[in-house]
Length: 478
Length: 107
Image 1 (tube, rainbow over the protein chains, first blue to last red):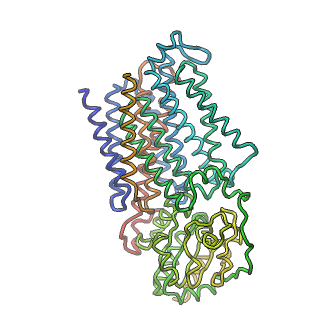
Image 2 (tube, rainbow over the protein chains, first blue to last red):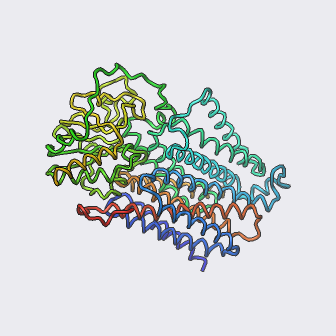
Image 3 (cartoon, helix red, strand yellow):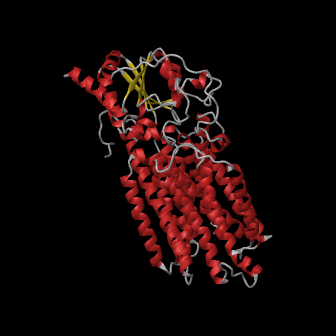
């Protein structure tokens, strides 16, 4: 019967591969997700068969608690809260891999009576019992990657939920401190690989990895979170890979690599959409307001309009493009926006939603929000498809977006966002910008769009503004 | 030498899986970015396999068992939460959904 678990692992690997393939296409995504969940079930069954499972009570306690928390989280989370949830889950994945690395090491250490200040009676025998220096190196890697993923994700979660500041946290000597941590980790890694009975090195390395996770994410601003969250997603996969090397299990390596690859692709897409390199996102402290001046000052005055006046322009429009951003999520305005779109359509206008790849705080954030509000998928248009026809649109409504429509990306070579692909809202015949105030966006730079001839600011809470526009339409219909 | 061969074998698996992953997901539409991330959250819960064998090992110390059980717990959160929330999200993405059809609405 010993052939059953390996067979199940192979089937499970196939299901994971098919599952993640399915997740990359709209028509097959739901089935893909289900396929990969069956793969997971088989993997668990195979493990339970092969380990024999003598001590069952701890597994039940851990699994029951995890399942309950996971179930409640999946049910209760608001779609606006998805970035926070994904950040936390990235972190849990990293933590689980850290614990697998440490637990494997702890098991061997127990047998050889290795502990803080207690070294193995026969170091080379201990190394062999662990599985050689290959094992000590991979245990170290699992703890390191898992630890960085865990605390990095907690900081990302804190920034996304507003628990800690969204501004980049920079301090004097940051690079020196970071370099010292990296050096310490490298030295500890080499030492531990050769002498794994130095228990305190393992503990110190765990601590250093946890600190490094914090240091890696605090200098990154809230608007760059789509990149960070994708990167941490990738790390959580690589952490599972490292855990797979530790327990020498191909299934963990394969699935971890699939997740790692998917995270890398998303990271790459996000960086391209901001026209910045990953290095720049991670280390420049972008958005701290210290980097790069904003070229020539902007002349003129922004015009503002009341919703009741904006109604007349909308009422006459035959094509309208809605450009949502993070502000729509904050104001929870997605349902009101869909109502406005329906009112416009009933009035004979064609309504589209133009989605910038980095709008919001995570990849695909706007798509999820609008899907929640029951907006039909075929109305969502990607940036590259809408831009060529932008000048034929009667009205562009910018809701809570700023940097992704900032024409400085085209016009101002001195601007920090120069070269970033944007949605050309300024080309529409009329542009409404729904905003609380004239404050600049995440990047901390002025937005010339507000001062364009065809632009009108509608100040106030985005949701309230959209609702009053809907109200105008309803009134006139009555 | 044997350890080196084993490492080579595992590392090849890793490399091939990495390339496979990059090939499979190169052109994911932006609509699916969030479900792809939450779905891969669930998949990275595969550490559960390692966690189970640690928590189930006989005669280990209390600390080891606690580490194993905690790993089982966190990995299970990812597995259960990740798959469920991804499914919930994808159920809202009814492709070609008719306007005014409220079926995809979720409170």
